[in-house]
Image (cartoon, rainbow, N blue to C red):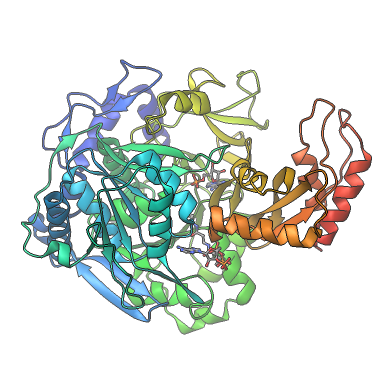
Amino acid sequence: MRYANIHARSLTDPDGFWMEQADAIDWHRRPSKALFSDNAPLFEWFADGQLNACHNAVDRHVEAGHGDRVAIIHDSPVTHSKREITYAELRDRVASLAGALRAKGVAAGDRVVIYMPMIPEALEAMLACARLGAIHSVVFGGFASAELAKRIDDAKPRAVIAASCGIEPNTVVHYKPLLDAAIDQAAHKPYFCVIFQREQEVAALTEGRDHDWHAVQHGVEPAECVPVAGNHPAYILYTSGTTGQPKGVVRHTAGHLVALAWTMPNIYGVKPGEVFWTASDVGWVVGHSYICYGPLIHGATTVVFEGKPVGTPDAGTFWRVIAEHGVVSFFTAPTAFRAIKREDPAGALLADHDISSLRCLYLAGERADPDTIEWARDKLRVPVIDHWWQTETGWPIAANPMGLEPLPVKDGSPTVPMPGYDVRVLDPEGAELPRGELGAIAIRLPLPPGTLPTLWNAEARFRKSYLESFPGYYETGDAGYIDADGYIYIMARTDDVINVAGHRLSTGGMEEVLASHPDVGECAVIGVRDELKGQVPLGLVCLNKGVERPAPEVARECVALMRDRIGPVAAFKLAAVVERLPKTRSGKVLRATMVKLADGEPVTAPATIDDPAILDEIAAALRGLGYPRR
Ligand code: COA
Ligand code: AMP
């Protein structure tokens, strides 16, 4: 009943509930109340409080006598290195970097873009910004220059902090040339860049603009934590929407800290001083919340893992990391387990490692298929907990509150709504559907603390994307149902977003890239089922009239164009030229029908189709790409 009581109270008495949770963090000035609804349907939390995120994540633990506790373990099979950083060391390193940024003019409210691989310096850069009240915007390393340029133009950073390179299993990713190209392409020019030179690659620095990470800190005064208002943006994180222009999700400082502080013991069951590991990337929301801020706010030890589930060097790497560092709670995406299961179906490599420290495995980022859950549970012999959330929410909407009150697991469901989330299933007109019926999943406003208050410089887009379809609700963009026991099931997206290896991508954005090819007249990108990555994108293009180039050549160019414009993370490898696209008589491209063809599901031509014969042509093109898969 503990969960049920807490959830009910969070909805009936949000102010009382969240003010109590606010005790878990340190305030420079306590807020007068939790919820600020004067600007409804836009809500804010703890707006008149004052606090600092870096103080909460770092300094307060040192001040409480835990300076010798390990804050960060960097485990990097791709560079064959491991190191530990204590809370006291982390404070000194972050204060020094923040001092250098401040000496170069970075102040509260300035934006700083961070483009770094999975190294502790990425977290230090985030925390140094937080220390000054600067707003960071981390860009995932797998995005190409053009995507980085879009984010630079939108966030208009005073500075960019980057590493010279990232290390992928078979290649060195040259971050610095990608950054240089992005700054060239962007209309906004940052005043300066700080470059962390890795020993695997020393990048050329641009005189006057770029500063070496160590040199820039030489002789500067360490910076103290600057208190900011509770509704001061801690960061902007860009995520895919329906167009090629990413959405800048804003996270306010106080709500972020209070919500994460609630989740660490109650969802993840972690105690201060224990080791918590999230195998994701700081470029994603999961990395912000559970590689950086969540574990550190809680005084736990976080693992920064620079490697892959397989191939670095083998499918036993995860078990080695858990055993070596004594991980108690582990969080990753289902795709990582699918990769391991494919390489080592019997889980034989587990025999080499003692993973008895592990209490629970958490999965998110995409639908956790029951096969993968079953395999993980059988091999690891711990509960496997699926939980559902989004970049927008910053922490789980639905989960099994393992630390509070473990609830029975139902495979295929991320369990029940977390405090403050009033989840409903609606029909297209906004009427609530009975239990068990599939519909759009929406959350009654206000959303709880820690969730997005708006989009960066795009309030109108925020309202249109999330608040207008169902007045009084936040539209999640996911479809699903709630069963008789109140368990939530997430079945599909209701928009053009696809999920590739736990990464969220916009098919609309990809279509914009294909349409920019000079020979392409029309195009469609669909997400097709993939055994490993869940979904992968597939593009079908029609050539402009009069273009008589060989189809395979154009298809190859489309693949290269996508890699160049969006980056390797798009995993766009499938493209074919077709004569026509299937459309309704009113001209709407029938993407869902093509997805069914590619996935090998039964297809009946929609009554509104312009010309049913086109479906045979599309089926032939898909067969040419190997779809449906056997
Ligand atoms: N910087 C630069 N390039 C990157 C990158 C980064 N940080 N991360 C990935 N890439 C590149 C990869 O090298 C790959 O390039 P390639 O086309 O030249 O091979 C491409 O982007 C796709 O990467 P990825 O999605 O990682 O696929 P993969 O085939 O290399 O590995 C998995 C497959 C399943 C092992 C991998 O996707 C994985 O570990 N997924 C976990 C997902 C995850 O953590 N999601 C976070 C949400 S919780
Ligand atoms: P992102 O913003 O990148 O975290 O992606 C969020 C989207 O990923 C959600 O809207 C869902 O579509 C999907 N997603 C995340 N977690 C889950 C889950 N546990 N089950 C099903 N889908 C999920």
